[in-house]
Structure formats: structure tokens, C-alpha cells
Length: 387
Image (cartoon, rainbow, N blue to C red; front, side):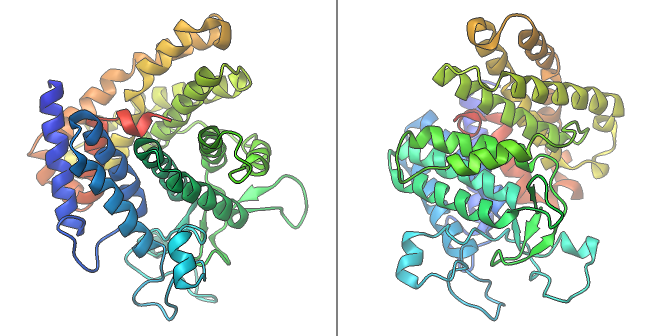
């Protein structure tokens, strides 16, 4: 597909998304979902970069505004009203992320004392840490695209709020840990287990924001970065879940870019361990043969998450190959080149979900918004993968 054809397809997908979710034309209430919207913001910025059409930048800004005024406030069916931070209206407008942001799930959150139902919990609202980090990243991309530091400030304030709520020291002592899901007001955990990649994702995202903020005394995440450095040392990162592998690739790409930009070799060992986890996961995923399954047994957005991550591997390998004084000679380069061998997996995933017949299946239509947005990102991932 040529670049012009790709841009046209992404434009069509994002126009359909805007209409489907009440972004353009705007409707009340809009259908906002934080994970999908983070990718969508980056897609509109990518279309703006490719076409220089300010309408796409304006859609990105309108989406940020809708997310903050929908997911930064209590649900319409809640007893509470206003900003979930508890700030008064005017202060909440100035600091819309200080209370975090809701997921956007269809059902209300589980109330205190209500029995836990694992199946039902997936449909209940609350706050997910790994959704919040995606929004931090999206806000940083908006700040860079518009040269407006307000968006970066909102990203840092979101990082501070999320970190304070999701991290904790166990009552038995020892290393800090993280909750996976919190209540809308961040007052109590709804799923106390720690997400496998949340600490790494937090560390990389905080580092991205700190790099963007420079030495500003008012935007300092160094305490949070130090905390995460201790937390992410724990556990095995390898997974055969395609979305999880894609997330690790996203983190590896950002680590590489930040190291390259600032000429720092401080995270060579971390990068090596992440690449090892990715390679183990890719080998297991390839052996599993899930891409041969019938359409109804496949989840497009999970597969597309892997395709998005793989889209950055050539750039990652190139940075390592061209700057061996920083990244070292041999070890990291071999790992990065091994990743490039898996790029055909991404091509196969995108080709499959570009087929109109596969997009008529329930596996696609049941998650239409997230699927179309992540397909658009897989086709044009430049803005999403950048730091």
C-alpha cells in the first residue's frame, strides 16, 4: 500500500470512529473509552503530520477535551457529580487529570461490600493504570505537536495522581507493589493483583514525561521514577499474549529513543531484559498458531497491538546498529535484528483485518471502535511510537 493510500485508509477509519463515538459530529453523551481514545489522539496527530490539515489537529484537541469532560467526571448514573478529583468546577477545568480518569466501561464500578465477580468486573468502570499511562503518552504527543505545555502539565499531574493511588507498601513490609484496578475516586483497589507490565510501563512513561519537561522544577517526576525503578525489578516479563508483547515492544522502542536522544547508556541492561522477554514471547506466540484460527476466535485489537509494536522494530534496530558506542557491540544488535525477523507477522495481521470480509465477523463488530482505531495505528504508527 502506498503512503497516499495508507493515509486515505487511516483517514476513513478515523472519520468512522469520530462519527461512531460522538466526536464529530459531537453528540451528548459521547461514547468515550480511555484506551481507544489515547490511540485515536495519536492517529489524528499522525494525520495532521502527514497532511498538514489543521482539522486533524483540531479533532485531536476536541477528543482530549471530550475525554476530560467525560472520563474526568463522575458517571451520569452515579450518586456523585462533578470532577472525580473532587475539585470545584473552575479548578477542575484547570486540572482535569488530578483525580485520574475513568476507564469508560458500561457498568458502574463495584460498590464497597459487593461480592467480586471476575467475569462481571471486566465490564465495570473504575481506573486502570495501564490506560492512564497511555493517556499520559497521548497528552505528551499533543504537547509536542502544539508546543503547548499545558498538555504536558496535565500528563504529569495524571502521573502523580496515578502513582500515589496505585502504588503501596505491603503491610508485611518489603518492596512497593501496585494495584491493577482502582475505584473511580482512587480510594480503594478493585483488583489488587499487580499487572505484569504495569511497573515497567510506568517507569518508561514517567521517564518520557520527565524528558519532555526537562529541568522544570514544577514538573518533577524523579520521586515516582525512583519508586518504579524498585518495583519493576520484580517478576518475569515474558508473555505469549500478542497485546502484551506489543506493549513490551512499545516500551523497548521508547527506551531506545530516550537513550539515543540523551546519549545515556544507563538503561542498557533494562533494554536487554525487555528484548529477551519480547523474543521469548514472540517465539511462543508464533508456535501457538493462533493466526490460523477462524475469524470468530481471534481478537483484532490484541493482534493489532502486536502489529503496532512490531512496526517500530526496524527503527529500534537501526538506532542500536548506528550507535554502538552507546548501545554496545553485538549483544543488543543481535537481539534487535532477531526482532526484525518477526515483522512479517505484523504484515499478516494487518492484511487479515484489512479484508472487509473479516471485518463483518462478530469478532470485529463486537469491538468496532477499538479495532478500527488500532488498525489505523498499525497502518500509520509514527506518532504513537514516538517520544
